[in-house]
Structure formats: C-alpha cells, structure tokens
Length: 143
Image 1 (cartoon, helix red, strand yellow):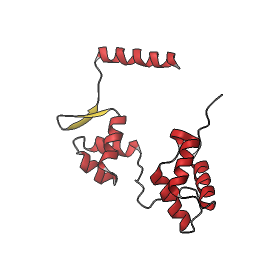
Image 2: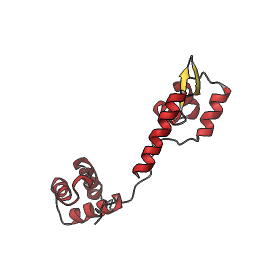
Image 3: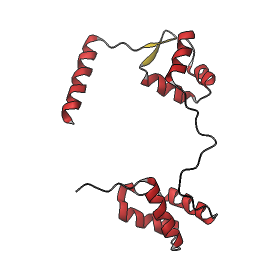
Image 4: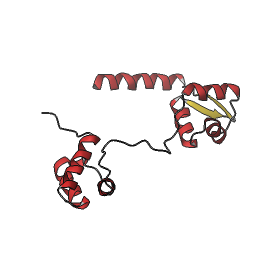
C-alpha cells in the first residue's frame, strides 16, 4: 500500500479545522506531526497560518508575493553572453534584473564555466564523458 503524502492545500485546510476547534498552533503542530510525520508543516509555518486566521484571512491558497524573483529565459542570458562573454555575475544579474545567485544557478544548469574571464561551455574530457554515460546508464537501469 502506498503512503499518503498530503499536499499543501490539504495541510492548510487541516490547520484551519484545528483553528476553528480553538486549538493552539503548538498543539496543532504536535497533532499534525503525530498524524503526518515528516510531511507535517513546521511549527513556524503553523504559527504563521494561525496568525493569518486570527486576522480573519481564511484563504488557504498561496498568495502572490510582491518580491517574487523575476523569471528569465535562458535565451536572454545566452544573448547577453554572446554579446559579451566576459560579463561578471553581478553585471549579468543587473542586466537581467535578478539575483546574482539565480544567474549562477542558470549558468551552472547551462553547463557554463568561467575560464580566463570568459563564460564558455564546459567541455568534458573523453574519460569523463565515458564515466558520465556509464552513470546515466546505471541510473536508468535502477529505475
């Protein structure tokens, strides 16, 4: 039998249920840990939701965040790099209007490395390519 893994919406509805029953956030957290184990929301999260409910906000859906990071396409980043491959992470972040760490993660995902001040595709050595292929095949066989 498969294990039930609750979704955020379900957990928030359960939090609202216990709020209506006049349980405290701490007591609710203990109950949810007993019921859901590692899938239970954190104590801090429970307290935050109870604060919302106390202010008569009973909507358990995610709210739009004002400070949500801007998303950008890899094509935008690629275009900047084609224009000037020696731009720093800070400069790329400023041009894309995103956080420096976001640019770093995208560059890593695009397998770009900085060599001699220029962003270039990371080239694997032949032995590394063989090893990588072997690991991919092993991973596929495990599934």
